[in-house]
Length: 442
Image (tube, rainbow, N blue to C red; front, side, top):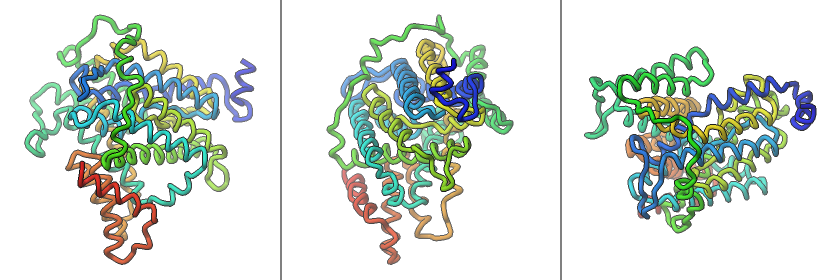
């Protein structure tokens, strides 16, 4: 125990084994929903598996196992290399974008992993050479903020659709509230909201569990013969090592890689600084000493994740729950990583969770992601027009890629049209080229 304390610097950071243990458990409880939502994001709601355009069989069990494994491995890397209480897993956002395209048959699973791998490699290079500040300066604040909001609205749309609360079969419409499954979904959403209002840790996970249990006597939740099983790596082998880089040379591929990279980059930047701030780890200038370490872990995580069938791996803002519980060292992350490993053996229990339970969580994830909307500056029309176009196009076209591409192009156009072309970073003009090609060829 003494060596453990010395390695993770318990005394230096004024913490203890018991505090770190509880903090790690708290972090896991607040982000364990990724094990439920990630399989649904990739394979789709209401189905156990899918066959992609190349005939590759992808099962929810395989996606869940690889998600748990990679979350474990990369979080442990954060623990031992960076000694920070940050946990990582597949990020919400680009996973639903790629999953929607996979389910529609417009892209193969291997092509998705190829694009994720390239975006991860770019992130690694930028992390190693410290080009972070250049990227931060290039993208205007309103665009950075609105990308998160755009993805949030899209994810909420998917949740409303999967639960039946809204009916999008003939445009926009109200769902059928005479269905028990729809009412159960509504209950789940209200339960998560109430628990969150009372600041209950793990509100989303608790809401999913309670809704799933209530669904058993209602005939909505199908209980498997056993809740525990040894991971079936025969299905996992189908998603490991599948990399096809053919799409990266297309306009559509360039846009999709930009979205994957951009979301990961700024999500990590905001999360790391935000969570570190809660832990009083920032210096007088608001910077985190050694920030290159968590950035590198995040970037390597995306590369390793792509090689093993996982979409973009990112640092989770839910790590703040562990920090609030007292976590200050990598031991918090170690505990969280270990719990992810254990969950690989409970795939049947996780896969029994119905859409009526995952949908409300998805709507709530959307709510969490659109909170940056308040930071958009509407006082200057030339700054606000791009974000408006981005959110509207992303939501009503049902495409994150189209929304973000349109928003950036609208921002550049309105600046040029009003003679404020000097307000636009030269890098944005370069970026506009593949975005225009995306609409021409996609």
